[in-house]
Image 1 (cartoon, rainbow, N blue to C red):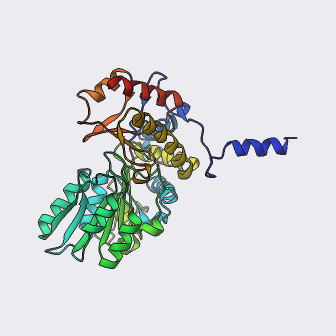
Image 2: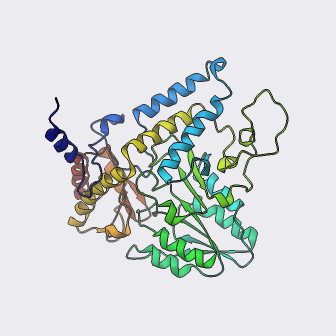
Image 3: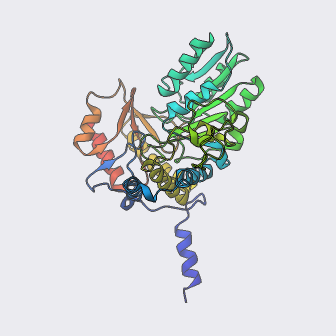
Length: 397
């Protein structure tokens, strides 16, 4: 019989100090050569081996179309909605499947009222997809874009709250800034918008899958996440959360599969009614037999690991990275103002020329965004990776 005391001790070894489950490095689940130190998940994540296999099996189905049943056009999408709802804390019916963050943001822009003289609040140097659509909406509505300046101490929240007023129609914000991971306290923003009757649109592309998101407290009108970063999914896949208040709005497309009883292929009558929920906002050909199974496998793995455990593990890695940078006299925003999976390292006088290329020649992969060296590890990174990063960083100075 197994020794109960040994089993208990083993369980304890798999709990972190804050009580969440501890995860060993998951490098063997990815096809990453030993000599590669990839610290750029915020750019594009590697795919899991199992995700690649799911995508292969999915695309192979198209070579045998006689095996594809009408129900197959809906079943995988339903499973994706179920997994996505587990990550967000929503109902599956609140999830639309989209090809990109820009698609989801355009959907939000089409369904939120903006009047002449209103303002739309964005962050300075916000990711372009989460700026261009609001710039166009402001032009068409005779509204203005109100840009929140970057705070020197990393505290976006105070600056955002100061920018909101009675003419704010929409605050279009990320959970964390894409260049360096600096955070916005979306709960405080939501509370203020409730007082002002403004809408909140959130871009979760650089956070969903890597850190906790409290839907009940933040209550976005719309929230979108491209899946090819922290959701470990394939390119051209994404998720759009739609608050139930907006689920009877106008979609960007009018595909057949969003309509009532669309699974009955033998009925060729036009359908005027949509299926209930956010699926009316799905991209056309949502059943993509290559991408959707791959996305499902990626989301399933993230749910199995658990967001609290992922967040804890990544926070430990970024703590090590930040300390390495600070030891060398470089600037890193305090951890209370940045996401647990991001480190933005800044140099006196700006990054040295050719910095990212120097790292690349050493097989260490990071990003330069603005004046920050962006370092974004994941569960595949080991202690050896972090030590290599510190060594190469030291050599650049």
